[in-house]
Length: 160
Ligand code: THU
Image (cartoon, rainbow, N blue to C red; front, top):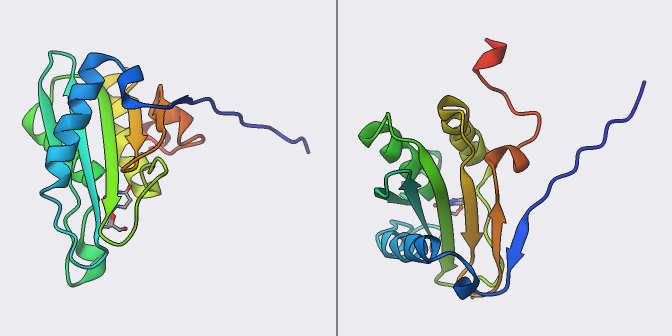
């Protein structure tokens, strides 16, 4: 038996103006999408925006349902929107922002496990890393250079 250690690296920014212009703009698009969240049950609104290599942008927001598990996270709405609309374009970056009606979200909100798996599929498919940025309503912003850094030992089609 041997122990194997997995380490991961991510970057933390203190303020949005430390980010590249195209990512600041992408966060603006994510915030517009966040306004269209349908979250009457959790009161937690999430917006996601995806930047393609050619500059195109698609967005998504969380869409809840009275049958709770039928709802969908913003990141998966956005990534499936991207896959459906521009299946042959490579994705450069994905940004996520979250806020709540009941409290100030002052920490970066990372994608849930199911969203990580969904994003991994598209990163694997395009054979190019996707930069992932996430933030709350206020506070620091996290950047991960690749989904692989957020989901080690992931499952992909190479196992099938
Ligand atoms: N949610 C997202 O949209 N993305 C995440 O990564 C975490 C959670 C949504 C799902 C649900 O509508 C609400 O936030 C509370 O879980």
